[in-house]
Image (cartoon, protein in one colour):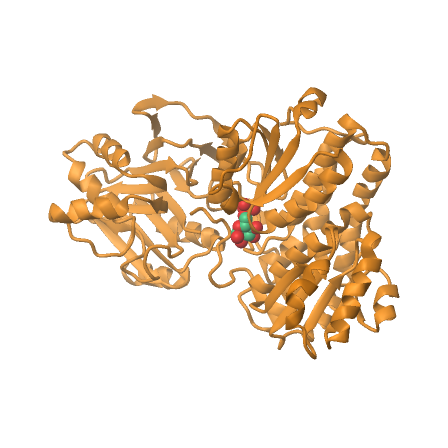
Length: 601
Ligand code: G6P
């Protein structure tokens, strides 16, 4: 969702801006644009659609410049159009601004500025910012930036160019992501590491409220108008992990990375079969104080949370709830100092999850997070951090993001349970160690899964059913399919089907029953029979033929794992299934329509 890049260097920055925007494409966008200081003026180039179009326009307009900003826009205020694309200019053409986030009070500000004679060209909330900068500018850039920031409410990461400072760009961060990269011949800004990594490994993670003034040789950061020092971190991932590496799509590459990611997590957090988390401080005393666990997350991270709820309750005995962050933050959640709130997020920047975690903390909760992006907002807010070590995930539809979250949650549950009482820890650890190879098993039968997928390309609707861990896995399997293949699909707790949804089952309706959680297979079998009796075409996802044969359904093979860990390896064949259905349907697998990788508004 909206990506920002910016460049201040000694040489031309157009290519960096365009390449940077390409790296941010995965976040989701519908239009893009750049602004450069060029021939004594700020030159703006924008297009609707893909970045290739923007690159062609830049080439034909022969733009160049040593300082510039770029943006990929995911429409919120106003449709995708050139007028609404960023960068936005002030009326006097002195300021250009790119923005990620939402300005909540933009309507009042716009009215105020219009009354003063400012003219607006777009429907966006962003356009008030360059005009406020113009209003407050009297030759002192810092003063204009500070005054502008004091007027705007909401979340924003900003990149700003001012015509009077041709070598400089300004970055501002307030509840939306923006980082600074320090390179030899330039300094740069971007929404995330993927756009910066090809140029430098040196990153400054600025804080909320920070304003940075950046030139080719200098970075000055201010907080509350006082200059502050922010540490330079060295990112340690290989930039090749953000390339397709021979795979047709990032999604398939990331599916294939899963065994290695799971092994990395086990190697890092399991030492001689003891669970050691470097950044958490949850000891026996603290666990004794906890009377409830609340898990908050969005999307697939929420599905990982659903599976974790079952496990936490089963092995720690602590009542555990899982809530959608977007619901949690707008109700009156019952949170006390005895609550442990766990946020799950791949990006660490999901706006609703950030807000929910912040609210839980404000109410006195102890906090932890399971996050992939190092140094992200959620990692900074939580008292205890478990990194999922998945590396950059580029495909919008998460795969290794989800499985790595689950494995970390499994480890956390065992880590906590053993501090209360857990007699079968050794057995659980042994089973966890099998998960990477179980996942590999699935990859080795990719072609068979692709064959099954062929049958579903004309399908209009699919129902996924399961109980307990299978229900959690069904939620994720169903989401994977619908988000990239655009086939309508729903997941149901199998026992709930007859309370309404079964009315949708008719001759030929596709139902996929997840049967990995064998403890409840007898119950599930009755539900399968109920839909077959109404004409459903059922596929049984199971690790042996029994369930499928007993009801005359087809088998979809899944690996056999410990029942408590069902939701991990069981989802992998459905990731591949969704991938092939989408591939056969000709869908844009890595960048599905309307979706954003990181939902920062
Ligand atoms: C978006 C992504 C999903 C992801 C969700 C939560 O909707 O497309 O794949 O699960 O956000 O993101 P997070 O980064 O917080 O895990």
